[in-house]
Image (cartoon, rainbow, N blue to C red; front, side):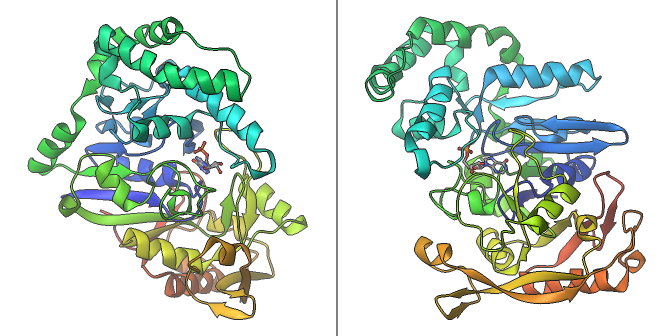
Length: 427
Ligand code: IMP
């Protein structure tokens, strides 16, 4: 079995953690290919809830090797905090591999992320403040620090000094902050060397050899399609490639080894941070969805903005990622509405758009064209087949599927691993 890609179809928090965790039991490797500890996966197994930020959700599946790919930015303090917290609960992280090419989030980039947001004021992105953007900017500027650098103190010091030459000017002169010394940065990074050493590998090679042996590799995206730096709602995006193309560059697995692209899609829409969101509900209806879906950020605790399902976005995600299967999540959250609006197109200054408009200005002016589907009141959390759902819920699912550009293969009706209707096998 070749590689599979799993991405978010909307603005993140679609429930990828649960999907990866479900697949994790039957795959040999789960690879995180982009992002860093800006992500937040909540995985519920029986009575236990695990909130993961940096580690791939595959860490919870015995038998599966979790991999942090070259496309990820790693905050070493967070990495070891997460490992310690999981091991304290009896979850072994012994198999974790970290790419030698992944970039490290240095303390000055955490500082810069936060002060830059404050500086932007009304124009802020609403980042998670974890240093993600500045670290990817350093990577592209070729002044980044990589995992492999911590094993050569001389090189590490040279690279940190080179980065600080520029960073300190910005910190002091633009943001009025204290300069950072190379010593403090080098010291912090070196303090992790011994724990890090056994995990570090040429992960591209490891994955290639695994695929040659016929093993299954799942490439898991952080964030989601509309947060992708190229294909998302720029500039209100994250700084990495969260779509299926990023799965290849962020892992070293080439496109011709990818067999399936799974995308996780919530039965309604949420986003955190700033930026346009055509189906957003700002009043009591939004609050009702937020409460029913417990829509608060796993990483920052921020309340998520909530709105109705947007089929234009789903079609866009299907196209940009080459989706072969959608995994629909949180259908149960919609129980109890008499009518459920579904956005089928946009109205932009009197003109109908069935596809995402080309420009940001148009997207800002998009108002949803809704179809109103019948709701249901029955508790659906015990359903295990499509036939167990009330008729109106079945129609809701099938109508969404027809509009969204790829088949729905799995439907979530609750947070637990078991609360899933499998319409066709994902693997
Ligand atoms: P950054 O990734 O911290 O730079 O934040 C950029 C944007 O991406 C902000 O709007 C964040 O709220 C959003 N974002 C980053 N990671 C996630 C995620 O895992 N889920 C949802 N939104 C995210």
